[in-house]
View 1 (cartoon, helix red, strand yellow):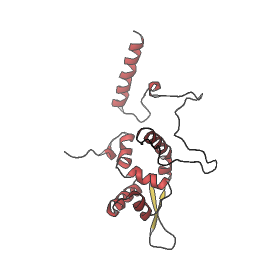
View 2: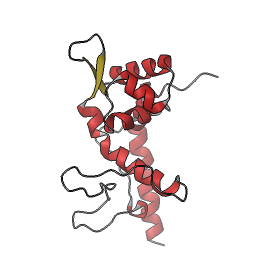
View 3: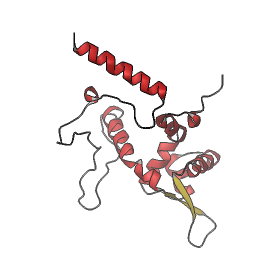
View 4: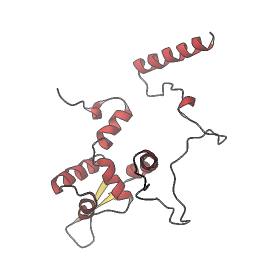
Length: 169
């Protein structure tokens, strides 16, 4: 049985998994967020084999997450975060907060992210309404977006109908 090609799926979440779902991808982004830019730094901090690191960096460059730029005065390169990778930073912070809550031992978080200006901890973005009140999964309603096809529109129209019928009982 072959692997599913997430990159060719219509769903943007599935397509993002083609880039970020490989087990080294988010760790490479973590290291870049923590300041690594050179191949040797990524290798040292992650303990990843050079051939695997080279392939993963090539993939992240191809997907527009890193830009490979010549280092000053040398044959080596630096890997610089692109706007696309910088836009992922809030999602990374949310993932780190979840991991710090659920995946650490009794000693707690291994790293703390701090604002350079204030020294205060950077925390995961909170989901909130316009008035500032908290939102949770229980507040969620999914509706088709402008890019939705017929199948998706039908799926969520049926869910909306069922919800409305349930509220009239």
